Image 1: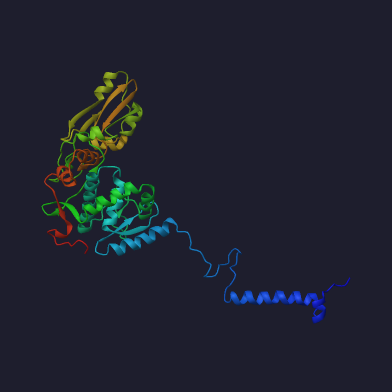
Image 2: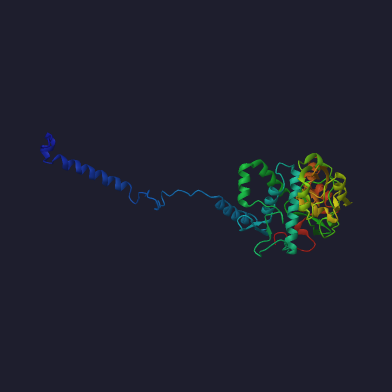
Length: 370
């Protein structure tokens, strides 16, 4: 079969297929001229697109945290650095002091608390770490590569990645934390010019405790004071726990005391002495004497302020407050803040005879930012 050609094509003497091919080639040359130097990105797995077409990789939480660490270091070059051993990843996160304080406030206190309470927490948290850095305290550490852990052994701390997530989840609450730390920046709690042991806990039973009732050292600024706000404010003001008497005795390391009569059981348990802060100082269980703190830890109670009742072969223990009871009560701080007290008034109340001072003006000459 022959191709049919028009009169113009007959005149030029060019077959139709040659004219068609010439047009295709000309179009290709024009396209190449317009796109000179461009390369077509491969879509094959394992190959990388050219620089002109490569897209930005999606940032992971670790990438964000690493970038934020760099930014925080640059912004806080005049601050001491704190090396925190992260318990989950076993990595050490190094951050400027004020960033560390933000991580503590965000982890240790509900961020919907009053501003003055959050500021008081910032003061206590900063004081704790400044004292630890100054004295080169290594208590609770198993490595020389870090200064503190992120656990209750020292202070609970939110990592940079966790702070970033909190900011996204609750920007209002996070801003309160940032503001509280900023308003107290560079300030710590001192007694006779030295940073105090700024202990704090969740909820009192109505009183804080003298330090020597719980810990080995008697400190003049850690004295028992009334804290009536906790009972009204805290959901941890009281708690009742029920357990079998056999379990109760077993946890205390005692042989089960025959429970043939309720009178016999009641005579086997009694409180011998109370602390100044109205907690159990010493009690008798059978023939064994135990401190209130020993009973608290053995039974997993919230505090050493407790009493009990019996129901047949069960004991019902009621605890009042939560925590060791020494220093600042966090829920008490919230109650004081709601009553119009400032952060300074709160810390000066809970830490007897102490005051707030800029860390750069400490008598020992340790310079803030050195």
